[in-house]
Length: 435
Length: 76
Image 1 (cartoon, chains in turn cyan, orange):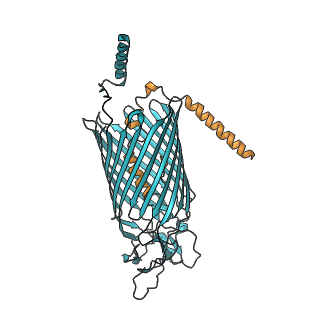
Image 2: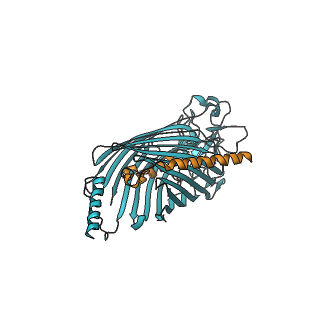
């Protein structure tokens, strides 16, 4: 007995020596694990009074015995500001009927038309349970829900992972399903119908819905003591109403490229020019390959990832993300971050539609379906308190620059600034406590 | 049909090669000190990843890859 105790204490001392010179506080078995909280306050702001988002996010994690983990998430976003509606700018003023159909709004000459009635609050909730299953498997399941004024999301997900090769290789399969309901202000427009006068909601449908299935198959491999890599293949299928109900496409003169005026209805306010509500296919299938590596060297951690995405709307994208965590001392670190993103345009992306020609089945002038590059540059600074809690602050700049291929331009549109470039600031303040 | 058989054989051979290759990689259980650090987890800051994925989901035509494709928002 005495011998085994001596061996045990010697082993414990040796383990401590291996792990470091600090004294490790003994775990009190009677002390139940406590909640751990991750909190973040985020400001996201676009230039030119476009979208502003103030967001509060909380992630609460409770570790139970035997690696059973419960994670609860809450996010509240308040959104204001203006967003491009897809209409073609030109050197004259334009007037639009608001999404509600109750009023009209004007855009001065030469400006990209925006909808400044954008105002929303989003509340998102999530819950996830994870636990080992047998010696080599881990299972987890979760539910997600979010609600905006005009949108409801409900989702569920499952994950099964198995360890191989002495737990150096992990293979995981994840499945998520979601059912979302859109209830746009004024009703969901019938695709490719005209924007009407105020109070004319004859081409609006009631609520619409879409279903999404995501499958992710991933392999994580420990290469050596300092290097870890992951490769994921993802499949995503969306089915249903995939339009943005607030986006329109201008009808333009086939020679000049200018929006075609719309005859006014006597006694009624309405759009100054001809605009159609956008039309997207009601199905979308995406495939992506994502790979990430984490490398530790002299206390610093390099986090490198790349994603390739391709979908049946003919959009291909590449994303490269690099983070480098650099400790300043035992309690502080800085982490520079650079992200580069580039995408091709959807095959139905049309900045405008020429008048007197056959309408295509699908058309959208949504700038997010156009061709653009985006760069994010940021810096994060974090520090640990004496009690082990962690503060961090990050500031990032996001810039998206787009271009419209010449073949999609009509008449004298070539000389104009049509694509709404984007500059945004991401400022986040986080506090992690309870560990 | 013949092409399918060849393709299947190639895929199986690739998986077998990868699996045998992977078995020579890795560390022993007592060599996981660095990999166990919080900053060495693939998702070291889950809240920041979730926030970023939500921002990029609403501004770009791609999403997901690391995990699910995001969603649950009328922003795209």
